[in-house]
Image (cartoon, rainbow, N blue to C red; front, side, top):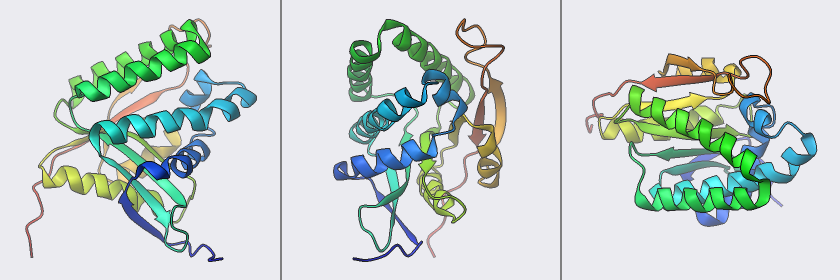
Amino acid sequence: MKKSSGESVCRKYAPNDVTSASTALKVAFDDDPVMRTFNPDDGEWEKTAANNFRWFCWIYHASYGMTDVAEDSQLPGDIQCAALWEPASMTLGGGLRFVIYFLFLLWSKGFSYVKRMVKVFMQLETKRHEHAPTAHHLMILGSKVQGKGVGSKLIQVGIDRARALGLPCYLESSNPANIPFYKRHGFRVVELLYPFEKDSMVEGKGPVITLMTRDAEEPKKSE
């Protein structure tokens, strides 16, 4: 059996990556303040988190084909990090897949849960089109490996894709601890959003979501 080399290789996501990619995302978001606001109970989080990320991997890959992964170079299929991107505008297929996802949540989690999630989602979508109407949107980036440059290597794939088209990038960081990482990659803060501020189930303002943009660059010229 090959052992992990610690080196990562970036490539396009494939449907058979779903289990490994969703597990990596679950690990990455274990202490995320916004995710935990939706699922504050440890038992509930353990039961539902990876399944929700499986849905996200399906929605974004099937709808846009802009999902990237980094896998261990010595352990093919061992996904260390995943990045889910989307174009500026939602497609019909993307919208329909989200409807299916919300119907599943309505059946499995109930009306109140879906109502809260849709409310936050609509706030974020409104802000995205306000701040960056033409940008490639980094919906989710998560790594189960920290301090080895895996996240940096993978986010650069998406940045280069946007650069090749002369487009800006945009993201919402749900964990303040990640802001320095994104700043190192050229993102700047444009707004602090408190989506749970008027939520009766949350004390005070609740967790903050940091909205960030990265300006468009000229495509790199061929050598």
